[in-house]
Length: 383
Image (cartoon, rainbow, N blue to C red; front, side):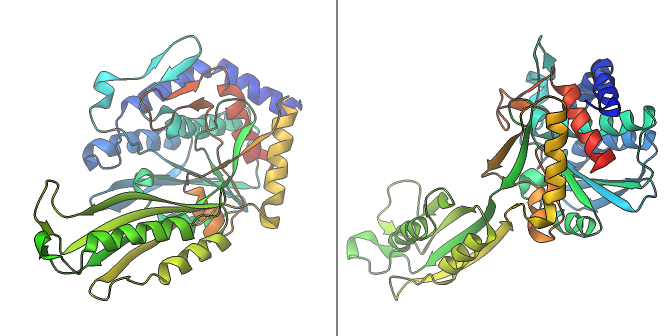
């Protein structure tokens, strides 16, 4: 292991208690995606304060009914490295009253600790290590964007993320780092979310109705599932389907709808899925279809544009003595925008090691914190 990398790993070991104390504070500041802005943004403002203490200039992007996105920059170098993450979680307000931050000899637990508050603290400690060890690269400028709506689909943050990524040399994303050393997320599937509504006329169920929207929606569900599935590389899941009363009723409804979630490994398959949806036709001339939605996130796919960043990531992991373990995930992140939309070289999954994101059993491994901090710091220093 190189001398500087060894110093960074050692720094992480010596400052692990500090890391865990900061992480405790971040986890216990609740930040449910759809929670009240005044409560949720306390977490974002706490994170902002940490980075301001490191010398970052910070600013806010305020979005009505969503909350406060936190932005910052540090340094004047020509190489702009973009640190990207989110502080919102899927856990409703009040969760920490019954399940606050806790630790045992191997793991730390708490709402959002793995996805992805631990990763945001990883950014903080990585930059702190570079500064305090006096090895922050002179040619580098850091920018960051910490979103408050990623778990809700990044509706209000997507545009800002893409704009900032266009100015970046590399994007680093500290989404969860999987169960052990050496893991990063090398690719992510794209996602389309589409709503299909079938509109007909309400009729008496005993009069042999001729335009039942429920029947049409059932047929469209089967059509989408079959046409948007080619095995593991593209698949559609019908996540919601509804029409009519929730109790037995002698009437067919005037309308019914379904929501489908379509995942695909690359954007060419995304185009196929889009064409399938575009080609949808009603099976009943008395029922017409209304289709809305589309691409939520493009696929995060590595290419020639990102080879140097992937290569350097592998080198650092192996220099620390670990096996490189690339992961391909069906779930998306804001890294899908930076890579899939603007082709900024993006390394994702740089967060803490752990398991069970979006689950009450969510945890992070405390033993691997120093090497995860070192991986981020060394990427900032040498990518």
